[in-house]
Image 1 (tube, rainbow, N blue to C red):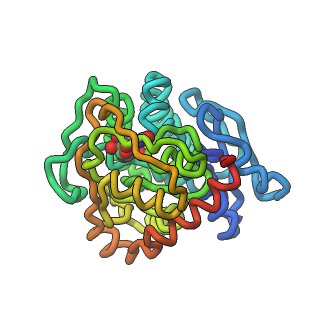
Image 2 (cartoon, helix red, strand yellow):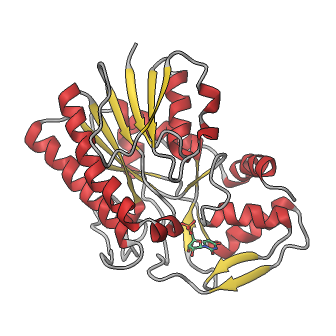
Image 3 (tube, protein in one colour):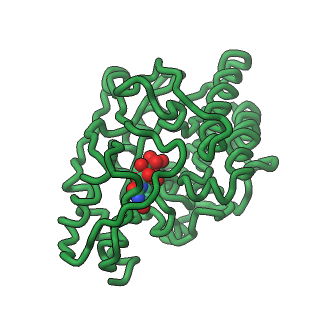
Length: 313
Ligand code: UDP
């Protein structure tokens, strides 16, 4: 039985990856320190003998007994309010954590896939963003702790690949949504869904004209699975190119929830908030034969079903 280590295994993406690898017949070792993850996301896996969980901060030396075939590094705070609260941990897990996992991968002769991000493109000057664009990042702004940790992560991973011949994969993840997002993680969609369900004001930052392109979690997981199995060591964007303004996203959520009391309230735009974002997925299409298949209507409906179970109206 092949064995995979998933760091951040109790988080939103990590827990969906645990499910996928269990379904594919793997032995799954999930690791998390639960600063943003939750055991609720993986409690259904605890009875399985092919599932293990370690409570550990991967910024510290990582030990896993026995063999490992694959490592997926998904541990990190991932929402702007989380990294404002935990800037040092965010920097450490992307840098020191990645170094530890690279060392572990080398020791175990395992293939390592790192979770990079559209944030490596910063507030982009190229649109849509393809993998050859180097980005427009403010290293000392509020997002710098995340963006630069992820950029360092890519540099370190590429160095292990070229210098040590380690098998590495890099996914640049664009905004992803779906069940198990944390209600209070401060990101747009969890905020909008929970506010609309509760009949609270929908908090749109700035004038809402900034754009994002939202990908349903199942599509992302499929892309990551294909990338891991591929032989491609350079970064690959995985995201859904369907781009909308944040105001449109808020309106779509309000319409879906059908709460006519929900009103939009405008708040200050956070510093360095990217104005536009859309993945160019030509590379993923060519190399992985991957394309997203869940549209927003379907994905938002599934996400609403989930938020209704965790948010009381
Ligand atoms: N945003 C918003 N209201 C909220 C939370 C976020 O209007 O309650 C905006 C935010 O300023 C950004 C966009 O929605 O322009 C997406 O924010 P999110 O935190 O979800 O992700 P990221 O900025 O990392 O793409």
